[in-house]
Length: 99
Image (cartoon, rainbow, N blue to C red; front, side):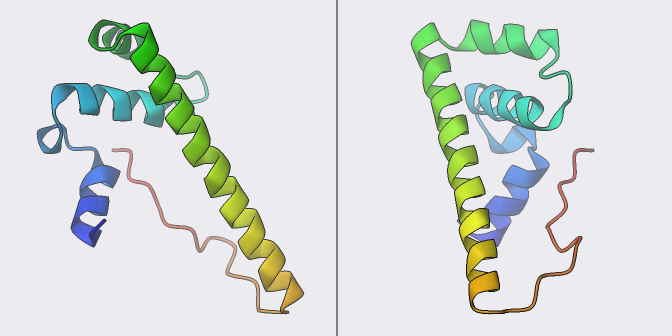
């Protein structure tokens, strides 16, 4: 992905996606970032826009991406320790603009 595509995805501007993509991405973001999970209206939108089978695909993809992200972060941390590379600064992660 280009940096512009990543920025667009990060901002989650509805004009950059078709309606179904936007609903799925918004739902996944809310599952991963909101303590109480997605709001009821977003849950309803997901159930309206996608069949049960498609919702399972969305959830499976979300879990796979999350798992491999954690795996990659863990492997990077272990590699840094093994090779005695300096640890990154505590807040060196990229920020996510939810506004």
